[in-house]
Image 1 (cartoon, rainbow, N blue to C red):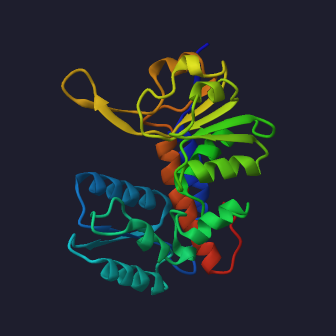
Image 2 (image 1 turned 120 degrees about the vertical axis):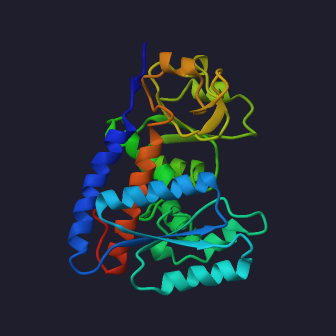
Length: 290
């Protein structure tokens, strides 16, 4: 058996086309704008920001970058976020992570206007996911579940295992699967026998950040596996490459497997755009349609 390889770029493009149509309709009244707030910044952050700007350009969303000095203190950062949120031209806000060590990211995210929190990380938005009423959902978790639905994986009644219990990926993804009537097990660093859980699973989502964590012999044959992990490892030729949390032999056991890169990543970007247009509709008293 060889796993069906998911084309994340294709799924992302399909979603972006729907977002672009919504943006065009909304922009007849006022532009849809995403503002990114970056503190200090480094090479990796600049790459992410450039990608966000390109993605926004593809669907007609106006992109603005606010770059704050690395010496900014917590109160100044929170005051700036409040100022951005009060600007009626701003539809969505994203706080670029990681922040300098002297800043508290969770506290800063909690000060965001939940209606403009397009990453879905504000406690109010996470709470809506927990209540089965998510609208601005955490982008990566939403992307993982969207991929399963786009690939027509049956979730109702499925045995699903989520490996990793982070607040913005593992936990919300598990809740979203529960909403689709999957039977969900969440595994983490305290799980005694990961393989025993995985061998029962029809669906596996893994988001830990540990290359090779999930091997082919740990999977139920034919399982649908969404690899959310991103790890930079040596490529054997003096350079580096990006791999997920699944070992290479997972492809021989799984029925479906997302590649890294090219799987969850492009769909996560599309989800950020979707959340931005959803935020615009919410702020205008309109229901979310994408």
